[in-house]
Length: 83
Image (cartoon, rainbow, N blue to C red; front, side):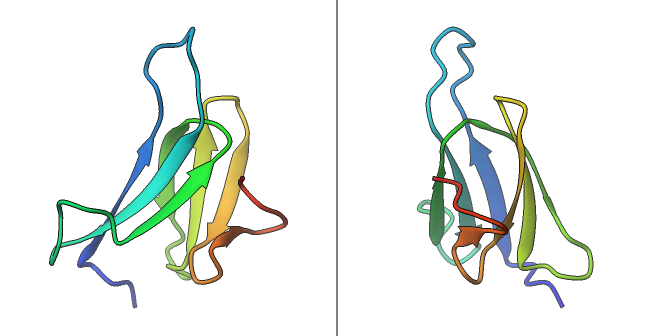
């Protein structure tokens, strides 16, 4: 069962000429002002989705066109590191 008290967001620079690294952040309703978990990425995060059967797996689409699957319980990408 997925924890519905956690929200996630992906960060990227919106200036296409000045792309930088990104971040996947998870916020709780208990403390929405500061992320509970932060995972830096090599490219800006454009979209995120949670696996419906395995909520610890998060798919991320990046500005550079790549896609990664992130295991939040282990703090790393499935098949390699995001950073």
